[in-house]
Image 1 (cartoon, rainbow, N blue to C red):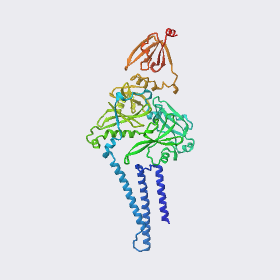
Image 2 (cartoon, rainbow, N blue to C red; image 1 turned 180 degrees about the vertical axis):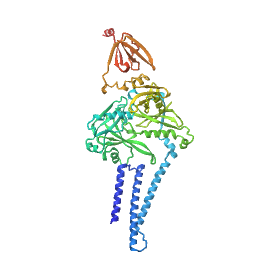
Image 3 (cartoon, rainbow, N blue to C red; image 1 turned 60 degrees about the horizontal axis):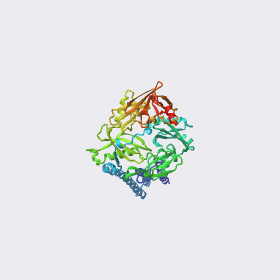
Image 4 (cartoon, helix red, strand yellow; image 1 turned 120 degrees about the vertical axis):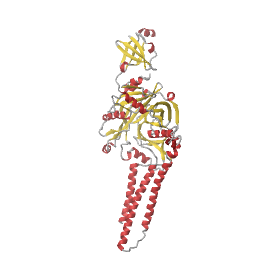
Length: 560
């Protein structure tokens, strides 16, 4: 009786252990997933251990019984014989599955299938000067993730129940209305805070404009009931696993659509080669408010979804493409034509999409790039823009060298194209992680570095475009100070060329104002003369924006 109870207890313990393991690790119930097979192997190992215990107990019990009867004759126990067969079968199954997984991984590795890995993606070739889009100053992402987090975290104190919530470390880069933002949801600080607030849910998320640096604690019309900080069945990963038990997908990430509605995006994967080399084939969108989920194939994903492919997936595929075109052994010995991505990458916004860019260099190069790779993170369309240039690391070191006496540290640079030239825009931070200065490094000649504490002034030295969006002065609706309008009469007038742009100096009533000639300047600017009346918005360093030449009294009378 005791033996039977012990065996039943072991079965119950096995079932409990497998349920706990599934609850914790959430493997997909899909034979194309290695996680599924490791889960099966775990179950077989636990079964092997349990059966070994019962066999040992039966053997000990039988030996004691024979000793008590003093027969001295060994008898064959049919139960033990069956258990031995099961033990042998389970052991062989464990060894066979492990060997099969390892064998398939080896046979489908880059050693034997280098050309297959190289052909997963295609790369479009283009010329940087002619084909790379001119940088849109109004959507230039100046803040990296750490800077955005530092700004966003300061807004937590503006909500009720501040002691109950924190801000998630996500700060995922998205585009909202063609503007680059970092967004991150609020989260429960711990289990007890969740227990007290789970009924109400999470009513806010933080968004930080990466161009202007303005942060906002965005309220939701309806609170989120599903998030990464939930417990039990409303945890995003667990919720999606139970709703999609057979689907292979990655960790869900937080995004918002253009209307500000919160979602979690989980990329669906399928192995390229047997059980190896997972590659995205679609996404699952989880409405963080309602819990509704929907699967999309790659060609049907909504346009507002910004990140389907991870940076790791993109960089791995690009490296495979440039590394294994001539097979695996070429990369070991001659390395003919072998290229690779550099050790730094960043993101830029173009239109409503986010692109990853990184340099492409020869496998034997030191500090020079052969061009830049631009990858759409929603579609994985890859373009190689040919341009001999410095690597990102070389540009960062050059920027740090310009301010070495201050000890600033350069962040990963942003690639910009100004007046058909390539530059690295580098933020320079102090020991506290605060951006103190900016540097523009000529990508083709990284020894040419221009540093300025004012980003607007720095960019204006290299382009005729309006740069006011960089300081947020163009957005009075965002709580900026009122714009000061200047009106006056030209007493004296002069001009000079600064970095290829004409700057007009206007003396009026003892003050000197400056007007930079751009594509948007009034056509009357070149004909400005002493005695003309003018008006404009006063900007930094006495520059006038929205400059206008006002008609004289005689011209008004003539027009009347």
